[in-house]
Image: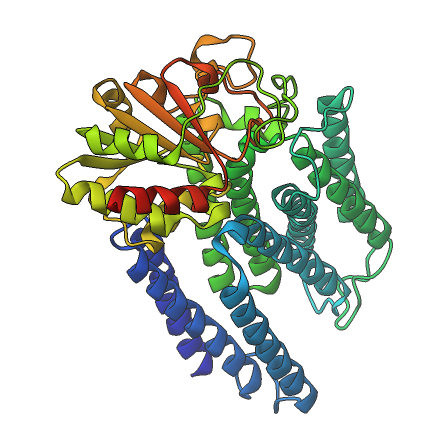
Length: 490
């Protein structure tokens, strides 16, 4: 009875997860999608806990062990407290690194589950089941270790603890190939190790453990090297890729534990993360393998040093004032606002929204232009604008808005750099050449709000700053837009 109830509950949770993914596909239904996901996870956790504690669940347990009950309750309670604290304290600007560190938890869980499963009594299995089970353990630990170490490096890069410039070791592709080949060789040794099979109660701990631990160490190094070789401009794709890796890690853990729901959930996360990564790469006019193998930003443009915000421009810039920008906006018929990570850092989305609302009230056409990799997380800018209650109708993706720039009077770029860099189209020597960007320079006037003349996260200088029709408004984004809002109201 318990087994049947658990199967039905797992099926319901799986359907809720599918509905959640469907809801998250559009901004209008994202909240409902989140609700479906929350309910699905609540069902999954509660049913799994009940199935572990109630006798007769098919595992042959006579009664729940008090120690198991205590550990399970403590783990659930601690997880709820930590999750609630993180959700309440983490700012939207820190969300990318939070996502990265959460991915590392999934990878670590897959590694620990794999090793724990390997140490469990073997029971009775035939040769085919034995090989399949050992294969599940090996692959699960391999993917989990790569996810764990890669996510930690991504966290460091997004947090600013590790430089965004890619680490390009000599012969890095050969090193990666050798590491993978060594993992395969160790896998053969592991699968053919003399293990205590198939005696009931026999332990899997035998000659295979050294090979398993050696592979785990290699996989950890491989994950670190893969992400270290990826530059800052690709971090949104990296976060999406690590999301996919974490999903496959969870699916592998599901196979090890014979848990259907974990397999389904992991497959959903893994496949959706992979699809999103491919979509983002197409939007950047690059292949997924180009991102995975790394190297983007290795030959980054010059980073000018020290000036209005700490750095000296590589050319002449036209500095402007808040009052001049206010006059430009009020005289315009069409305005496009391009948000970037700088707006997220300054938490300036709310006054920006008020500016757009004020201009719309005055009969000025206002839209927001979103680049697929703006910010450091897929959909980062969309979430910020939704938080400020910006209408979905005026939030446009790059493909929708690029053709409108020539007929736009003023474009206001707030804290964005790489996604509006004309070098991507006209400089074959630029590291970002070929990446589709927002063609803001085609507008009559472009106003860039920046702290200074530092290069963007990808480490590439932006010639847009030196064009005749570009005006630079230096300062903290929130302070600048707040002053601008006051000037517009006056």
